[in-house]
Amino acid sequence: MPKYWILSVRCWVESNRCQLNLFIFFLDFCMQSSSKSVCWRCVKQCGACCHLDPADRPDLDQYLTPAEMAQYLSMVGEDGWCVNFDPTSRECRIYDERPRFCRVEPEIFRKMYGVQSADFNNFAIQCCHQQIAGVYGDLSPERRRFDRELGLAYETADDT
Picture 1 (cartoon, rainbow, N blue to C red):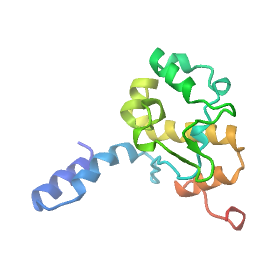
Picture 2 (picture 1 turned 90 degrees about the horizontal axis):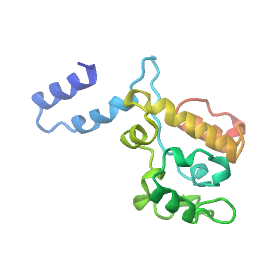
Picture 3 (picture 1 turned 90 degrees about the vertical axis):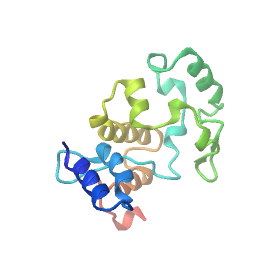
Picture 4 (picture 1 turned 180 degrees about the vertical axis):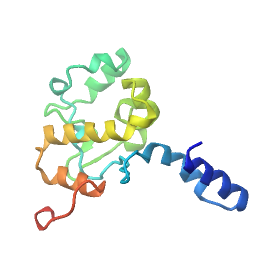
């Protein structure tokens, strides 16, 4: 049994008021074999994932249903950006109601891409790195901010 599940059970037994046991479930996706764990998370005001140009994603039909493909294509604006992306705030206007293919969640990635829970963080981080590099550039402020917020890089004077 993984140590974080044991911590959850022990915490629940020792104190019925323990708030940790709800959080512990998420740790399953954040724990890695290295001493430094990195957990994927959305970095606000990036928006790279909202660049939906189908030319950049030729394998869409491999993981979208026909209905999702139609929805996806209907969301692509003339400039390749999602019609629900607000370029001023750099945020999604329908974030809470966004479609399944816009969600970065372990169960969705398992169903869409065959990614197991243990591999979710690395896969999601690699997807973000690839998308950010394609949209903004590999050395862009968005890429440095993503890495820094996930603890993958250190902030420098150039990053501010």
